[in-house]
Amino acid sequence: MRIDPAGWPFVIGAVVVAATGAFAVHAALGIPFLVLAVLFLFFFRDPERPITQADRAVLSPADGRVTVAGAPIGREFPAGTWQQISIFLSPMDVHVNRMPVGGRVTKVRYHPGRFLPAFKPEAGDLNEYTEVWIDHGGQTIVVRQIVGILARRIVCRVREGAEIKAGDRYGVMKFGSRMDVFVPTTASLRVKVNDRVVGGVTVMALLS
Image 1 (cartoon, rainbow, N blue to C red):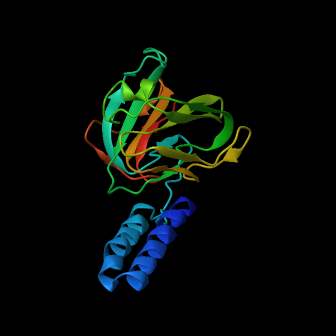
Image 2: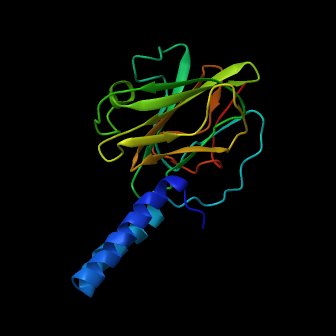
Image 3: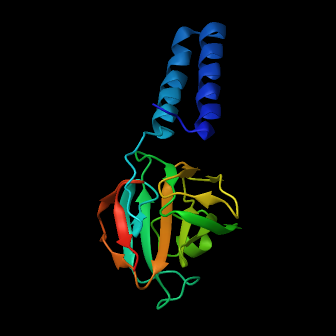
């Protein structure tokens, strides 16, 4: 299985410490770090996905559980302009992030902030995040990577002006956290709170 490149420094570091401890001190000392290396491999796994092909579809950008589906709960995106879908990622979920729609990237914005628990409503405004604005045939969709207590690093590999396809891999969050997707009010939501979604596969909304 493919491993996201962001994971290899963690895996290799754990293996090196395991080998050093085993040879320099005692073989048993290396076991916990080998277990840690396996856990890192599991966390940064990047399975192939049968990407859903539908021009009007807004795909889930990540695996996880839907915690918001409807009017925006934050301050930066006013109600009446957007609909919000939030996905909470547990440490057991795949953390590779995918593009919800195809189109052209018009803006990539980094917002420094705090590390509140990602499930808190205010985390979307106050926590550190990176958001990407996408022009999809004249309609704007915004996807936001948000850190939490465990996730302290965001990897975003897309740049302004890039032409992207729905389901393209574009980043990862280390470790856990949340993703928000903002769609126009004219879009028809296809998920509800507590639904499980799969990145690149689950259709969360249909654009008008």
